[in-house]
Length: 305
Ligand code: GDP
Ligand code: FO1
Image (cartoon, rainbow, N blue to C red; front, side, top):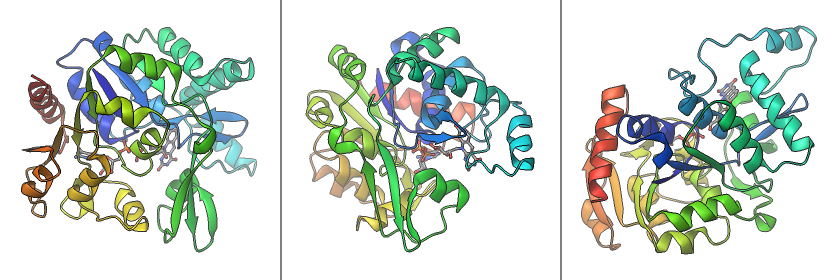
């Protein structure tokens, strides 16, 4: 099973899948468009969320960071007048320092991720979408800024004029991701931000053509006219897209077979999805507890049969 993931919605679904499938049967291709350098450390938030999930140490209240982590370094830096964009925990920082060291020694992000995964005893495949640097940059009336600056520093408040995946023109799909896709016919596009999590993965060369040859099930991160959380709605609107599950399905229509939307969605007319040649399935996609995560995962696995 291949899963395309960002850092919040899809990891919840993976958490459900883990209750049903052995980890070694899952390969997660992860967005790197939100990666950022901070205090000489290269932070890859979405990869880390997936790593910590499989390592059993993810803080599932926030869906980022290590549970019970301390913030001594972050707080000391602050006292010294160094304000870091991301409030990075001490243990989290250790992982990111190890990654940064590996990258400086010449390892690719794919290799560094595999080594860290192995150190954690993780049996799932965790593969960055690319070894090239791609960065989601948000254009606001106050100027262009990194996604993390927009989302964390400015709390997603500025108006969004547009956004771009800086570096996408030169970026390639990670060869390991391509190899994993060659070996597996089933792909889940999780309920992640279609603009800044799934968007960068799909903007890489070759991936859409590969997906056309697979059985692909996508889960909507939008219910009604709003994202379950995060800035997906605002970013979709900035691109002139309809903020709705239909808008998400439009983005994926060329390569998905089944589109899962929420049973609470009072806006979506499933016939409009079926008209695109896609099967529409209504499920309870609100993964607020372990049981709900497992139930959604179970229903999705049944759709692959
Ligand atoms: P990000 O990197 O933090 O933006 O993380 P993701 O892209 O993985 O996830 C954010 C998206 O997941 C948002 O658009 C949310 O609407 C969606 N999301 C979060 N939790 C859930 C959930 O329980 N169900 C569904 N359907 N979507 C969710
Ligand atoms: N999100 C926040 O809203 N505030 C933070 O201080 C913060 C710190 C942080 C540190 C490490 C990490 O891996 C993620 C962190 N996040 C934080 C989440 C992050 O900004 C985004 O939610 C992810 O990029 C979403 O994929």
